Length: 214
Image 1 (cartoon, one colour):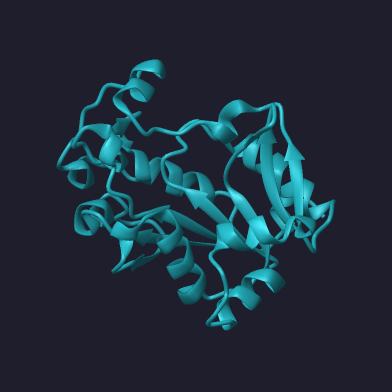
Image 2 (cartoon, rainbow, N blue to C red; image 1 turned 45 degrees about the vertical axis):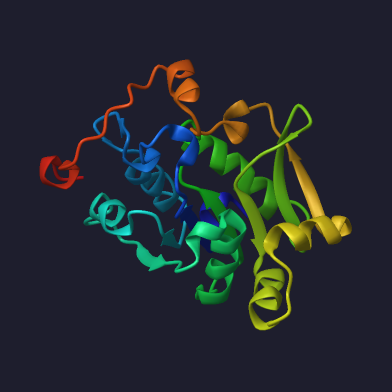
């Protein structure tokens, strides 16, 4: 089975406070003429059956940059508690219909379609009963792929641990995708990150009115 034949429910975590970006909401940074969050959402739409985006900080502004995309938008009321709170909210509220749930980050600007196709194909041709996590030179990356059986178990159990806690407590249920692409460990957290990748810290407040048809 190839990546294109998998039925994937992608969850894009886009609720963070961007504290380390010096007061700038990193999801609104202009990359290639569009907001970062829109760029990443379109990437996952290209290979997913469904994409659900979990918002929090400046939810209305971020939602505007997703205008016209075929995505489901939810807002985590407890987003200020951090990423694990948002991931847990996502699992509890997601409609799980496919082969797997992909837990993805909205600030991984360097991931490509080829990266994700390789990752998803490794799952489809490998240990499909296990969680798949990318690893580059010993460093853990993102996104993380949960078989639907595990995602549903986490969803139905009110006492279930967070996604990260479940992974840490169940190492035998994890398979590592050894990748040669460093894109899986790269994201935008600080102004120094943006400088490293040559990204100006510009935010356009009217992205949605400037879009050309896609």
